[in-house]
Image 1: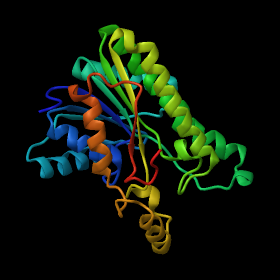
Image 2: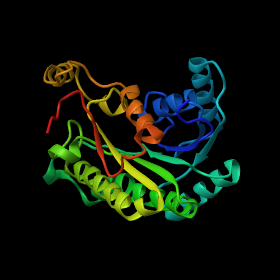
Image 3: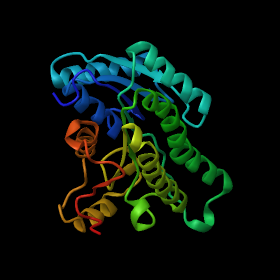
Image 4: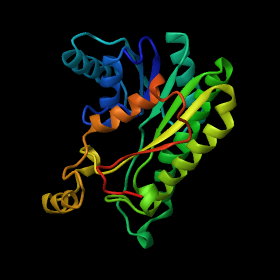
Amino acid sequence: MLLQDKVCVIVGASSLRGIGYATAELFAQNGARLALVDLSMDEGIVGDIASSIASSIGHRPLIAGLRCDIENPADCERAVAEVVARFGTIDCLVNCAGIVQARAMLSIAETDYDRVLGVNLKGAFNICKSALAVFAGKKAGVIINLASVAAQRGGGLVGGAHYAASKGGVVSLTRTIAREFGPVGVRANVVCPSMVETGMLDGLTREKFDEIVSAIPLQRAGRPLDVAGACLFLASDLSAYVTGATIDVNGGSHIH
């Protein structure tokens, strides 16, 4: 198993339809111990996730759920401390948390901008900083941040300029972490998905969905498991010499 007994924190994992959940299931299948962090996390959600994973992989994973507002630095520090108290350490952080908002540039209000940047970029900074305090001390650790093709092409399929800017910031943040913490044994990489069948696509009409898919070389939308597979590679020793990289998971829709 690629992650046997590794303690993996996955942020943004409360929805069974999401990338965070798919990553949790795949990591559990590969032997990981899971700490799932989300603003909406509660005992009921943790139970549903554990049951769903168990039905898929054949056994109940070792799993803990923590509620955390990643916009709040103190809350991130508390959540990371709770994971360390529960499991003894942290080996990997996967940050899948994010919100999207479709707005034309001239209609983005200050409150919209602050909210999207607050969760997507400030939140990523906060949770990475808290995890890095652990990783730097043990001189080992892996960070995987989820960005978006919107950060690469300028604008998303369903997100506005503030969303693209926030995810562009996540790419730069991750590369900076890779440079600064590489000398102490910490790796940091970013995954840029596109057109993945999660709740973020719920506002698209069938006609618009089909139009977008027709332009994708692989002729389909992505699945959460497609992104989870890239995360598994980056979390494992298969990518031991990979850091500061941007991994595209977009079906060929943005070849550059």
